[in-house]
Image 1 (tube, rainbow, N blue to C red):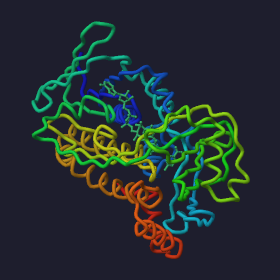
Image 2 (cartoon, rainbow, N blue to C red):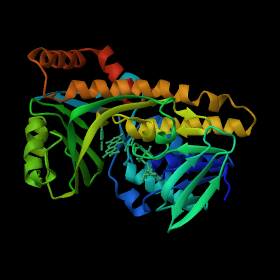
Image 3 (cartoon, rainbow, N blue to C red):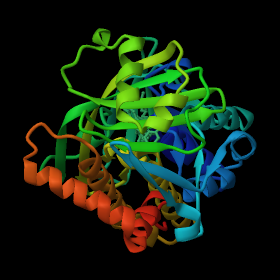
Image 4 (cartoon, helix red, strand yellow):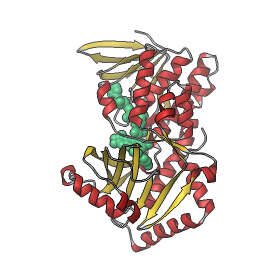
Length: 388
Ligand code: RFL
Ligand code: PHB
């Protein structure tokens, strides 16, 4: 088989890239290791920057998001029982959209179906060949049979554990990493959200976050030690702990119910450079990971897609500048979001080795944020998303 761009990974970045390229008349094949049902069962991000919202609209998949998503013009930050609001709209003139990654992925799959997009599920042993040559190709197994796809370019959209990044020689690739000494225990429950906006809670017992998917579906997180067994966290234990960490007015209003999903995610900051090797481009989690505190993971994947779409479209019009500068342009934005996600994580979590001095620094930073419009503006402009 031959295509123009072979996309490895059918998560949000692979699907969005495929959809956008299709609209520019560029042919793609998407290779996905899992079933569609499995991809759609992963509960992940919840907040879209407006740049991502625009990109989804450009891709022709904005209708359900616009009808069912929730525009948030601010968020609440709390420390102990004290809380204050960051007013995105007043500070930056912009807002974010609360619309789950699961829904985004579902919309993208449906759009690819409508356009007869080629997505091959349950592929095994995906191997990249000649990515630094002019004749790259990809081989994979499907149902025990080997297949080969010849292509002009390979897009590595296969997440942190994928094969694409690992295909770049170690002499070329540089990796930067911080692993945090705690995780997030997340619960999805069919209950109304505790508030109309998100609450990011700093607390001496650890961080907590109140988020949502819609008027009847809430998403909550608490910071937990990495080695906590999941079965220690009964629903009752989770709700009790969440109530202790969020402001009293929210704790009183909190409506609890059985969890419909519960999992612990580790927190990591990671960047791989460069994001291009010959005719291979890394996109999204394949190239970088952020801790979820700034809600940036999915949004960064989308800005990578924007830069790569631009580069590939220009390539097929005879101009290679966009693909030559893809890595630089994407990384400039990646590092800024890494910084924001790291700083939000550092500000709001309890670290096991924190000294009394470190704790006072955290308190002072939050007090400064509460009192300074300049500091709030800096947080808001990062949260709503830096320009592409
Ligand atoms: P994905 O979503 O990981 O998709 C990659 C796809 O590639 C497939 N794959 C392969 N396919 C073929 N061959 C191989 N060898 C393959 N290896 C892997 C995988 O099956 C998968 O379908 O990466 P993508 O598209 O770059 O999208 C990135 C986002 O998913 C990610 O940044 C966010 O979900 C990160 N993230 C969160 N971001 C937020 O903004 N807010 C959150 O609350 C949030 N929570 C999370 C998260 C990521 C998590 N992970 C990765 C464990 C919670 C979790 C648990
Ligand atoms: C979520 O709704 O899953 C969510 C929202 C904001 C974050 C992280 C996760 O910062």
